[in-house]
Length: 250
Figure 1 (cartoon, rainbow, N blue to C red):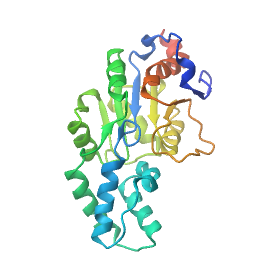
Figure 2: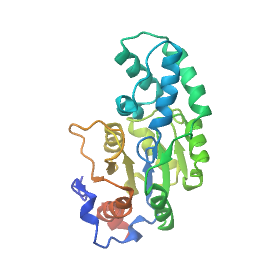
Figure 3: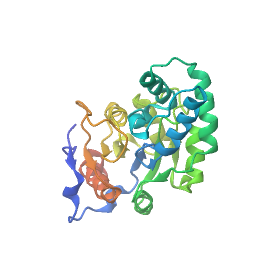
Figure 4: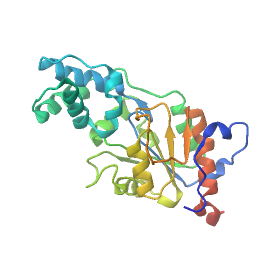
């Protein structure tokens, strides 16, 4: 699309001034698991609880991380595929959810620099939102447990609307819920699901390199890749400053 930044590593933004005024009235939408919060330890513990109950061996966290962005059912299916086992997925999912809800923030923590970035974005006049394939009630429970819920004007889980990622409607509807417009929005995620959703919604994207994504994204290219949350604010401001919507409003 005209006006988009080429995909770059955000290190290029360090040492140069990017006006934070570009963030005013913008909507910054975050994926949750593997992007904003490192939830893999608690998700893996809940999955292993369900596996061990059925006599299967626990699996290492690293083997299931790439499935986190697709939701709990896919995590269970992937674990059973690796174990070469057949089980009742619905029963396992119910047990998984009971364990996970009871231990939702036992080990889960925001990634380094995430909270400081939320503070800066909010202080710069940006709206913040969550677009995740985690169920909405679990999303709200986790955010509340970590003291983060007050940052977000819109929160959408996989069951909030009639569609979920990678359907672009999941993103566009949560942007609207937050009071924003897709032309003044950025999606921040860690996986090909997030990038595909953003592209379908014609919203620029920032990929965090420290999340749970598979190494290869194929032909899905984010607008910017960041290696730490310290790089998020200047990267988002650069994208929004280069967008046609920003030029029209300035």
